[in-house]
Structure formats: structure tokens, C-alpha cells
Length: 454
Ligand SMILES: O=C(O)C1=C[C@@H](OP(=O)(O)O)[C@@H](O)[C@H](O)C1
Ligand SMILES: C=C(OP(=O)(O)O)C(=O)O
Image (cartoon, rainbow, N blue to C red):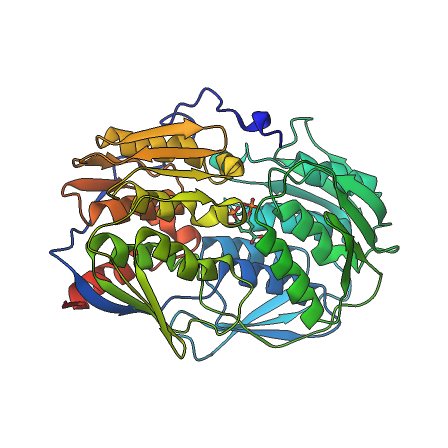
């Protein structure tokens, strides 16, 4: 497969993507030794984003129970409200915030601006919705997110009959000129830089006049479980996605059912907490682990044993106990690129070398994560080499120092994992974890301070 398009650009890790407050340093907590802790996490970012969009396009009101409340989901809520959707907080049972009652608009209205912040889900999922709205909708994002690939969704909307104004860079900002309806039909896209392009089009597809016959023509397709999550969420609302061939999806025109949904805890955000058990030899339990799920974070139960960890399940509690010595791994993470920062942090603390491949596309996440992980680990004395589509990690004794987070929540949490066993790590801008887990510093501190010594 051709992956040369992912070859490393000249990357200045401290350049454009610098945090707003680069001098705000959070001393990473060091584990005194193995510990035992139990952690409850807020709702899934990916499930909350999909259910918000589907509820906004549905044929009646929907209630989301225990949704995620974070910067990404706030951007999504505000985006949909800007198009005329009513989203009201209702008291619920979650310790992490209110439930959300979503009532679709009689008619979606544009003539507005949508701030995507850093959220890939907002910048990719909402433009097709704006195509269904009457009036222009301008999309913009944080400076650090303005370089994320958007050309595929812009071209797709045009092919579906929607007028989009951009400056030709295939990036934000741009304006979608909605006319109140989208023709739809058969189109071809290249989703090799993000699965979110496929999910975005599928989510709105049944509301297009002719539905959608979508073919992915690129040579690779990352994060397939996220596309399967989209298809499953649609199925729960009565929308069938047929897939007559790999890389082709067909959705007939029709309505999207209203539905009350329980949002599962975010299993990708479980990664740093479970990694804490792996690197300290301790034991961490995540509560509320679903029996069946479409979240790729569930793969942690298969991935962490590769490092030598033990994983057990009792009811809805998943428990990981770290090994005495961490083994290196050879891993293709194409399907779970979102988990890479935590996996790489563990690999840097292993006894032997690791190679993690299939993740060229994570150069287009919140930052170029391959370059950023290599730069930060090497800055602490590590030996990490960038490959075209991954990283080679030769474990070395690491020392303390500043860990830059590049306004990337998962870079910040990767630094926290390393800091558990490397004294003197200081993490820049820990507040960037608010993108998907605003409670990260508190939950991390509680895990370490309330965890009983094992
Ligand atoms: O659809 C989604 O909710 C997501 C899809 C994936 O995107 P990519 O395919 O760009 O990796 C994932 O990494 C991201 O965190 C969330
Ligand atoms: C890649 C990620 O986010 P986004 O949804 O903004 O693409 C992520 O959360 O790791």
C-alpha cells in the first residue's frame, strides 16, 4: 500500500502548534510503587458526537443519558444549536454532568458561524448537516486545527450538489451554502487520512434526496471500528447501511428514528489509566465497562496483554494488572490509531524494542502525533525513530524534563503515563485534556492518592 503521502513534513514541534500557555507546567505525579485503584470515566466522545448529530436529524426528540461534557462535545452542541436544534440539559444519574434532550428543528437554518475548536467530529460531521440547512454556514477552528485535512469533505459536498466556498487549501475555514436540501447520489472519496469523512457522510446520508452511494477509492482506510460504530448507531435508529463491497456503503433516503440512548464510558480515555497499571506493576479497574461495544478502546483488553499485563473482567469491571517486566511489541494499530499515544508511552518503558505501525494518519490528528511522540520521548533521553507510518522505540533510561503537549489531549496524557515512573516530568498545558476529559487531572490524582498500596 502506498503511504508515501504520510512522509514526515519539516516538523517544528514547537512551532505553530504551540500551546496557548506553554509556560503552564503540571508536575506529573510519580507512583511511589504499585497501587490498586478503581476509576469511573465520563461518556464516550465518539458515541456522544454521533448521537448528537443523529438526534438533531431525527424525526422526534431524543434523550442522551450520561453523555460526555467536554470541549469537543460542547463545540458539537453549540454547532447544532446554531443550526436551530434545541438541546436542553436535564438532570440525570451521571456524576459527570446532565443528560441532554435534543429536539430537532422544524427547519435547519444556516446564516451562522460554527466554531469547531479542535474537534475532528465537529469539523467533519457537521458540514453535511449544514448542507441541509437554509443559508450559509461558516466553519472555523482553533489555529492548531486549521491544518487538519478537510478537502475530502469539501469535495464530497460539492459532488453531492452543495456549494462550498473555501480558499483551495482543503482546510478550514470554509463556508457551506445550504439550500435546505442535498441532492445526494453516488460519489467517490479518498478517506485515507481519516475515517471521519466516511462517518460524516453516512450520518446525514438518509436525509439526502437520493440517499448516498459512497465509494472510498484511497488505498488505505484507518479506524474502521469508528465507521462500524457509525453504521451501528444508524441501525439503532432504523437506517440501514448496505455494504456490497469493501469500501462501499449505500444508504437509501428515509427518516432517522428518535431514540433515548445510554452513552457508554469512553474506553479510549481508559487507555492512560490502564496504562498506569501496566507501567507501575499496579492494578487498575475501570467501572462501567460495557459487555458489548463498538468502541475501539475495547481492544485494550487484547493489546495490553501483549506487553505482559493481565486483564480480567468481572461483570462491568475491567481490571488490568501490570507485569514485573514490560515486553516490547510489534503492532499494527491501523484500526485503533486513537490509542497510539498511550501504547507508545508504555512501549517506551518496556524492556525490549517495539515497532508500532499502520498509524501514518495520526500525523493528521490534533498534532503530528508521530513527530510529537518521538520529539518528547527523545527529549527525555529516549530513542524513538519515526517511520513513514509509525514509530520504532528502543527503550532507554529516561530522565525528567518538560513534556510538551502540542494542545493535544492524548499527548498530555501520554506524558502523565511516562511521568509515573520517571521523576521530574513536567507536562505543559495539562488543561488541554479538556478536549475529551476535563476531569483528567482530578481523576489521575485520585487514582494515585486513593489507590491503596498493593
Ligand atoms: O469518528 C470518530 O469519532 C473518530 C474517528 C477516528 O478518527 P481518524 O479516522 O481520523 O483516526 C479517531 O481517531 C477519532 O479520535 C474519533
Ligand atoms: C484524533 C482524535 O480526535 P478528533 O475527533 O478531533 O479527530 C482523538 O481524540 O484522538
